[in-house]
Image (cartoon, rainbow, N blue to C red; front, side, top):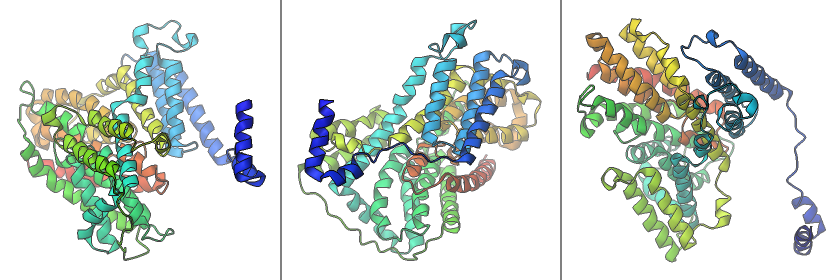
Length: 502
């Protein structure tokens, strides 16, 4: 109480009574209520309760248990809530993590654990660890780099140097953002790339009218370039490496696909998709102002901390590029700027408040849902319940790609690829020579990697999407429009590419 009064007197002395009344109590509970959003919320609750209590044999999944049925119900809840956005996406993620913990974990309420084997329950430690998943650290590292670049003025220098070759026409500047982001994502984590490219937007936005759609196009250019760019190299995104692991396995396909061979047939596909994405953005979100004056204002701070930021930025980039040689993965490398900037005072506790923590919570929810599907055995049981052996190779390919595309829009694309690739590798091997009619096992497994990368319909689909959504400039429906178009083009062109070069 004394502490509260001291703070109140401080504000009275510094700002006066009128300012205190406007500022001190500005964080209040909003009375706003939406009947439409309440209906969506009730729909999600009703659907969840119905699925939660359905008989196990209604699902057609062999070996389904009670915990897995609850996870299906929570999955239904998450889909409805994320799609309708009756509450913010990050809030949905928090709720679904709570549901998983209280109803499916080994630390759940006694009411839910009665009569169940402990082995059937999820580990509460694993679920809670999604808040500190290595990808989350990569997020934080990217955000910290972006904040440091802005504080030091290095973002202005980078924006000038990288965008200068693309002139001043709005359409060409947009193409520049897409290509630069795409090239970086071929060698660096798409999350780190998206966070880094986000720092270039602020100075460019100053040259655009606030009421046009150009800002939306430029913001969406970042997840577009980051997601698609990763297709171009084997190290561009984890699904690529998962597919290659099975394709090059001596006991499996044993195809010995190298870095150069991958780029030879995937790089053209990447460039075509980036150009098509550029065209789609121009059609969906045309620029009101046809010319962007790139006289980017701002100066570099000339002191020793700026040198620290520049050196750390370069070293971090080099470590990301050479992770295969150094043995330090991208997630661990992300700790370097966090540690260096904290120790040198480049980043302060006040700067940490600028991190969009709602994005962190939102992504953690997607990870937790993936943990629920995989760790419970639900996903594997569901896949094995599909009679792949009786289907034609074309049906196998179409179903696999659509399943991967759908799942990757709601859970981690890495988790989706890690789930589907091993199962499909076994399915393809069992089909013998008949799989060659669609291009062989390579078409299916690399197709999975492509499908995972072009899944970008929702803010929770990929970390770059979440980063773009965190700006507040992009609405979910904007992502859905672009994501569906890119998804269709990516799946069709990806299959054609793999079929022609088989």
